[in-house]
Structures are given as C-alpha cells and as structure tokens.
Image (cartoon, rainbow, N blue to C red; front, side, top):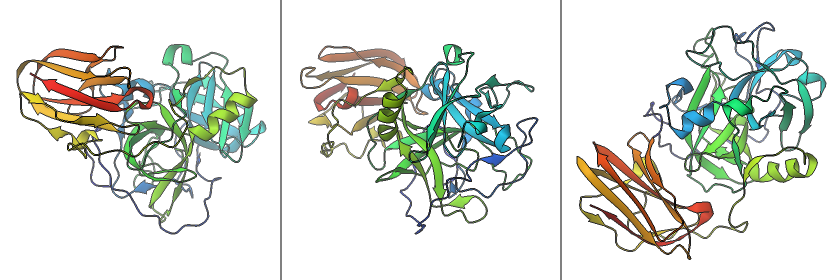
Length: 390
C-alpha cells in the first residue's frame, strides 16, 4: 500500500504472500486493563498493517455516507475474562458477531461489554453495552455470537451479510477498533476505517486493508454494496512491528449457512446472491478498467456511451467535471437484468441514486465540480446499457 489517500478512494496493489504456512488465530486480540479500554502494551499478534499505514478515524467519515452509517454497528469488545479486547459487530438487533479465538468458550463471554461509541470525539466514560450472553461459536469458521439484551441494533442499525464471494481486486474496507500501538504504545484503539482490495480468493478472502491485534472480529465490507462479505480474523508475515504481507477473512458465504442451521431464532440482515454458481468472467467494453472509483473513465460532455456492458462481478465508473445542471440517463433492458445508477462525489459519498424497476434510470442535478457515475447490476445482474450525460 502507499501513503494515505482520501478515505474512500484508496487503490492498493495485490500483495504477494510471504510463504507463511501456519496461521496463528489465538493471538489477534489485545491485552487491556480490566477496568477500561486503555491499551496495555503491544501484543504478539498476527493481524498486520500491509505496507504504509492507511486508515482513518471512522468519526471523520462523511456524514450521510454508507461507510459512516455501517460504522455505527461496529464495537470495541472488552473481554475481561480473557484480559483482552477484540472488535465485534451487530448482525441482529440483539446479536454481536466476533471471532471464536476472542470468545473461545461460554466462560470467556462473562462480563463482555460492547462500546459502540468508542471513537474519536465519543463520550469519555462510555460504560458500554452488556453483551455477555454466550450463544455459541465455531472454531473452524472462527466466529462467535453474543447476545446483547438491550438490543442496541434498534438504535444503531444491523449490518447486512452478503452470501456472494468477491472477485480478486474487488474494493473492500474494514471497520475495526485499533491504533498503531507499535509506534505509539499509549494510543487509544478508537474506531477506524481501513480501505483496501481483495488480494486472494481461495478458501479465505485475502485482503490488504490495514489491521492489528484487536481488529479480530471486524466486518469486511464490499466497497460497492456495503454489505459484510467476510469476518476478518488473521494476518500473515508480522515482522515484529505489526507490518506484514496480507490479512485474511472467513467468507460470509461459509458462515451464513451454519448460522441459519444452528441458530434459527436469529433473524439476519442477510442478502443472498442472484446466482450461486461461478460468476461469468467480465467482458471488457472499451471503458475498462473502471471497476474502482479511482479508475473512473474520464469523459467529455456531452457524452454517450458505445457498447457499454456490465457483468456479474463488474462495476463501472465514469468521471466528468462541469458546472451547471446535468442529466444522467441509463437505458437498458430490465428484463435482461436490473441495473442501478449512482452519482458520487470524488470522495465516494453518494450524491443521488436511481434504483427503479423500469428500462430507464435517470438523475438530474446541479453539478459542482467532479461527479462520478457508478453503474452496477442489482444482485449480480448483467447486460448492455446506454449511458447519456447532457
């Protein structure tokens, strides 16, 4: 990774594995003082920062952005029975998910508190939410579930879980509780936003979003749908200073069926893929590569696309700069596949969207500066389209 970029536009190169054959899963939490969330030294952990550090305080994410909205359902987990801390997130109004190696037993759940407001500018003495009721865990998939009787999700929201696996190089981000305690031992592990990319898609999701010990149990989000596609749990190649080669997450596609079968009483905010089969390869349309916000194809106005198409794992971005009123039209065959239209600012915040059920999506706005157009297939829909900007 490179030096820090804008919070919503980081581009990271795929990172080669460092040849680490053994993953240490039981050391991703971080020791804390029993009476509060202050950090007590730097642990021997496996979660890593990949290259130069690239994260920011979640509290500084743009208000109204999807990233800021989902961050509110992520919490610092104080785990006094283990003298440790991890990260957790709401998958139901009263259920938090984290890692099995954070909560390896019912006894480890005793006294667990979730601090959803432990972030920059948050309350100084947040007592946290009681989430000490142990529901169960799974060592193979490295997840654990805790119940929070006060139902914090009613106020904070619940994260949607995504059953579709991402493609290599797909944009992702992690929301987690941490700080670079290797460089600053007394730092506060406040809520962070770490952008990145998928670096490998084998049995687990490899990614290069920066994490450290204490980030265990964090949600891995798709940067397009803002749904949880994985459960972060381990890193590779720690050099002794928290820097390494790759982080990994357990795919939510593997976890969801287990939760559904074992815990039928939990109502998840789950989203299933349109097709459980292997996605078709992306077909270049002359505007690629433009899957990522930072790679948006620059266009001159007026603009009319030629032979543009979207595929099951594809997202298209176009960029224009012009003052004054503009109209963006997306025409396609809804019967062939439902496509959606978004307009973003250059930082990735959504300005407007059109997600109807006809053959035309249209947005009119008063453009000020750079505007990015995003075209995406709803639940993996694909097909050709005509984009017109006037």
